[in-house]
Length: 98
Image (cartoon, rainbow, N blue to C red; front, side, top):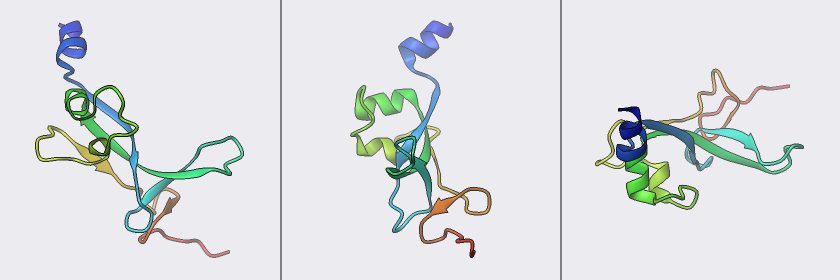
């Protein structure tokens, strides 16, 4: 049954980094390199594998539908950065004064 659920039907939730615009959204900050010179901003997206595959195929990196919840999605959630517990950037981010 597990093979059928995971490999055939794709009946499981995947979590990955979604795109985020710090001008309008509260985004997580991540580094693309070891020295953290190249930073990028993201959300955490949770979707059913079958929905992501139907919308994007095998490559979610260049698929806009992978970063949003659309009405046909089942069990879709987007987690934005919470500035009370994480370091965030965006209009609602709390900036600590030195």
